[in-house]
Image (cartoon, rainbow, N blue to C red):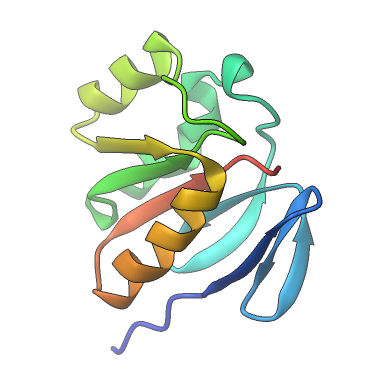
Length: 118
C-alpha cells in the first residue's frame, strides 16, 4: 500500500494547516493520520501525552517533537518513557519540526510528529 502522509502547509496562530485543512491547537500525526493533541506547553508534558504513540508499537521509529517557539529540552519523565519504549526522540522548535516532518514523511520515515501549537 502506498503511503500518503499529510503535509503541514502552515503553522502559527494557535494551530496548523494540514493538507489544506486548518486544525486549531496542538497536532499529533501518527500512522499518517493527523489528530488533535491535548498538549499545550512543553513544561506540562508527561508520558501520558504520548499514550497513542506508545500504543502504535513498531509503526513508529521515533518521535519528532515540536516544543513551541524556542527549542528546549523536554521533561526528563517524557525522555525516559520514550527511551524505555525503544523510541528515538528528536526535538526542536515547532516551526523547525513542521518543516522537518514534511521532509522525513516524504522520505517514507515511520515517525510520530507531536507538535505544540504556537
